Length: 422
Image 1 (cartoon, rainbow, N blue to C red):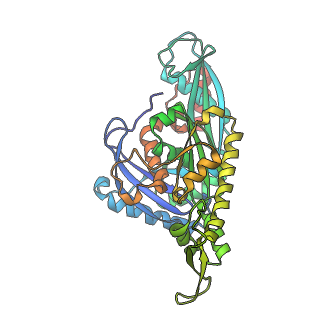
Image 2: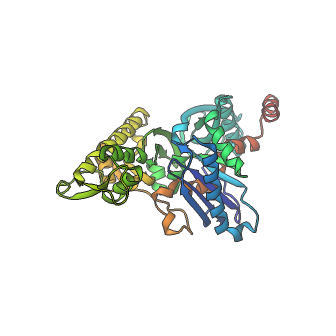
Image 3: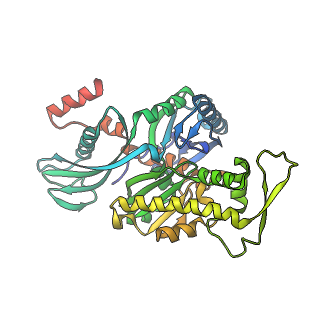
């Protein structure tokens, strides 16, 4: 399916609100293919956020404002003195539900048009509508014409009945309200919402991986999200409520040290799998409550790795269980792309290959130009992917579909008018 692109010269902005960091990228579309150049970046440690949910409104709002202000200052020339207004914001995988709908529309032997496809997608949205949920994505993942499978692009073909297999992603309205309030209190308008793991996949996957089948595992601080791509589209998503912060907390408890020291030890000496020399290599562990001159414990590195490895194995086992329960089988692909801030731990790729029994590579943004080296790694895949979603796939936004569809019958036009006006 050919996606609608943002027009050349448009300024787009992404706001990634995570458990460990908040990041903002501002970019300009540089061609008709939706490619963009990043002009401004801002990021800082997350405050008031836990597992994708807002737990302290004032702290979260202050962190968002500071992050956006930093990006605005860097992109001042592109904004021409005006403050940033519209942003695409991520939705954490643990707040989302993923499911498929099969819908059909009558085309009565006529040529199938773009509007016929939109009518089918709008029908799927209508059937999935609920006062308690917010629709995040409406993604067509397969077509049938008069019962014939394997249609990749139905536009221009002829038939009586067009069937569309649609992947829908929803989120509980109450889960989004606090986040939306923080963003809007920062004088920003939410142009679109995008699932974090979907954005990460758009940033990291090459075209063949999207087409042939690949699973993206986005390991964040509080959540590990999963998205499965096949045929060029995301066909499934899920999440595990564990991430890199849980590893850090385990270290802090197990070695009786502070969270900050545990994070430092994890980054400096941590490894996902034990080695033969770990028992003889000693590391210094600052003790909880001691000042900088206080005594430190000397412990073997094997003790640190013995804390890290079981937790990572647990996360990966839960991910594997989610993948098996999806029922997608061969659609999962033999390829896993590991990304997110917590994916950078040494040895995690090898451990993932062992637990998941798949080919694993580390993913980072590949479709983004203008990114400074400091923000061009796996930790910023979701932020970069939000820009890709907004610049290349705006046609998948539920509101965009409803705004452009032209109902075929008088009754459908009445229903559409009522839905839009009441």
